[in-house]
Amino acid sequence: MDDTPQEITSLVGREVYSNNGVFVGEVEDLRLNVGGEAVTGLALGGLNYELFGDEVTTARGVILPYRWVRSVGDIILVTDVVERVKEPDEEEDELVA
Image (tube, rainbow, N blue to C red; front, side):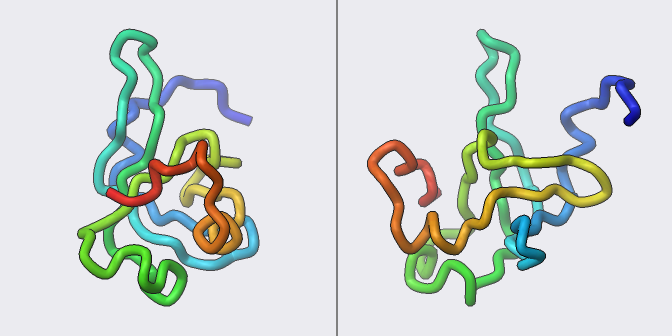
């Protein structure tokens, strides 16, 4: 594994897939915690509307909590979003942008 630090802007434009191989969207921007110097979310556009259904009919995109990210490489893998969108819990209200 390459431990070389990457610029966070290198995440923009990468495709995001669930760990089950379902296309989720493309990273358009990042949500940052400047004080903690950490990425807290991925702002996605170019969404797979079949995946999100009625959840994003009026939104331009969604913000996925960064804690859902499982791996970053040529693509970004996140936990299976389908179940989380269909049954969000109170802690994950960040989904709608």
